Image (tube, rainbow, N blue to C red; front, side):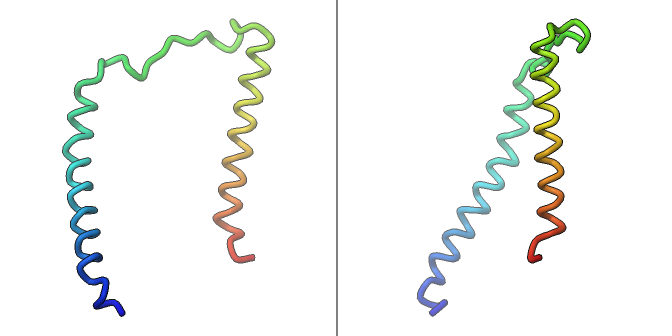
Length: 80
């Protein structure tokens, strides 16, 4: 049965290798073209925010913590 799909396996493997090598070459080129401050954004300190933004930021962080804890639970509880 595997012999029937052997050429498909080789074609998919070759495509995967070409894509991997392409991304290894392309990603550094793209990153080198970004401005130096691309990932930097000016944010106000937590004390300077209005109360609604403080609450929203705290809820966002609590939601992130919940996702982190549930992800760690999934790692340890799989199969139980």
